[in-house]
Length: 73
Image (cartoon, rainbow, N blue to C red; front, side, top):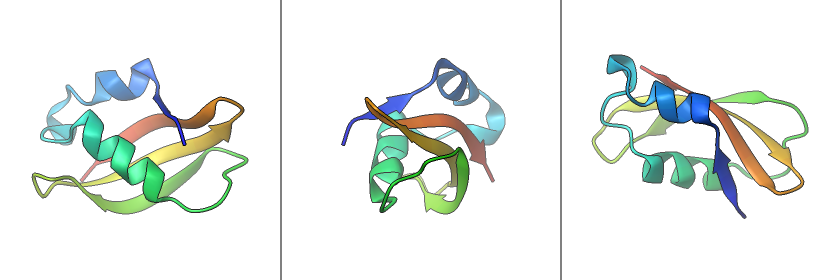
C-alpha cells in the first residue's frame, strides 16, 4: 500500500510537539492500520523509534493511504 503524506503533515513534523517523529515512523504507522478508511479518522497510540507517542489522521483514497496530519503527545 502506498502512503501519501500531505504537506501539512510534513510541516507539522517541524513543530516542537512532533519532534523526533520521522517520515519513516509515519509510513510504518499508516501501514499498520488494517482495513479500508473511507473518511478521515484519527488513530491513536503510535510510538516513534525515538519513543515519542503520536496520533495520525488518515483516509484511504484511490492512489493509496493519505496521512492528513500528525499529532504529537
